[in-house]
Amino acid sequence: QPSKTTPCTLFELGYEWNGVIWDGMFYAPLTFAQYFAEMWMLQYVSNVTDWAWGALSLDELVDMYEMHVASLWFGTNAWSSVAYGSQQLAYILASLNAAATDTAVDALEHAADQKV
Image 1 (tube, rainbow, N blue to C red):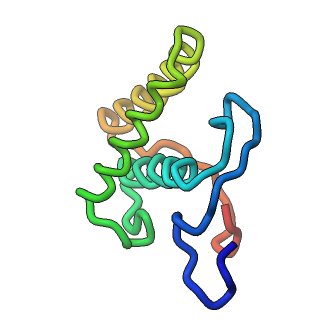
Image 2 (spheres, rainbow, N blue to C red):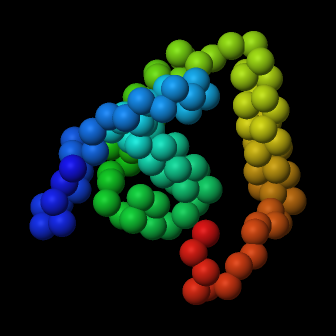
């Protein structure tokens, strides 16, 4: 475990077996890197101005996301493809509709002091 005085990086996180197949079977640096790669790419394509807290270049983000997509191949099958495909199609259609009608898509409203 990292101490309170040293910076925490992915390499200090260690590995922990969780046995949950849909959660990757274990927690590890790659698990957390994939989570952030996906979150930051969604921020970028949603036009969030300060995606990844401004800490990554677009090339670094693309590299991280390519690693994430390559690892998703292990969990790809006919059942998960239908579920994820339907969700992604709805996002694409909402984005195209917003672009075509020049209107914003309604988002989750919350107070500025609330953390989401």
